[in-house]
Length: 403
Image (cartoon, rainbow, N blue to C red):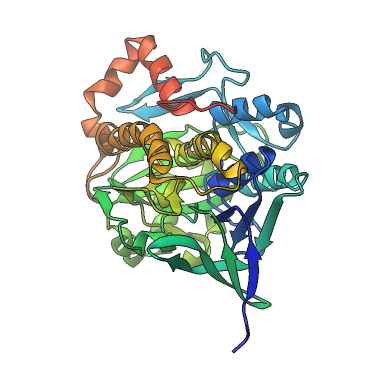
């Protein structure tokens, strides 16, 4: 058996997504020695969270990198307008946010991660290991003291004062002792695909239909489309065939009828099984989970990436001073991170499941425009509600700032 390579660090971060890279960068910036493990060879994966919210853009401003970041190709959305019951309703307006960038920027997540990684590499105490998949915890006397991983070069052991779990909704840490999951009923599942976009072409962002909803995101050269279906309905949709999917898209958006043939097979239509849940306790001695590892979000509002980054900022702010001294955070310090971020998580998940749930079909025969939640009808009458929704989506329930 090959002897494992061994690394010693202060904080080992598992997962190179938004939470992991941002946390690693902010800790390294404070002088903490950090090793980030990412199981893939690069960040190039389609249909991940591509929304950069105003709060994240404000974070980039606080770090002094906003102007450089905005040089990357992106599109902007200043309000969210949906087509409901035959009329257009704006339910989120970002223009009155007192921030540098009162809009949501759409950008491939790999561009965001590559940008942040480049900035992080400027710190000698930041180490990113690609193709390093964490497989198990290292535990001593009941305390997490590191992780085991597999790499192309063989086994790896990373010993650390703190392991930060940022490896998403299928986190290896969710099966660990003391990590009880509280599940909620997600209102939908999602099929993702892309279709070509013509220059200056515009489509409604949100259009409901019988048994489905289309959400169209302008990605410049193409439309990134979420085909939202009732929870558990994917087998019925696939049984109807790819021709039926193409016909449904063309019926809802006649402008796209001449392009739906780009969907050649179900290989062109990745499936996302939506889950909404959270850990009852995000931590144990030597371990803290944040982002989707701690609370899996629905794609509604695109707020999952925003919450993950806000978690990372809070964790770096609260734990950085202790880690900078080379000490392991106490349970009380880990608990402080969860306490700070638990309210935003609970409120956001409640809004996703309850308030927004009525916007999606209950079954494949249901037309969601027939049961538009009363609260959404009020958005046409009271503009203040649009600004409030814009604040919740754009800034989150509790904004975090770089110390």
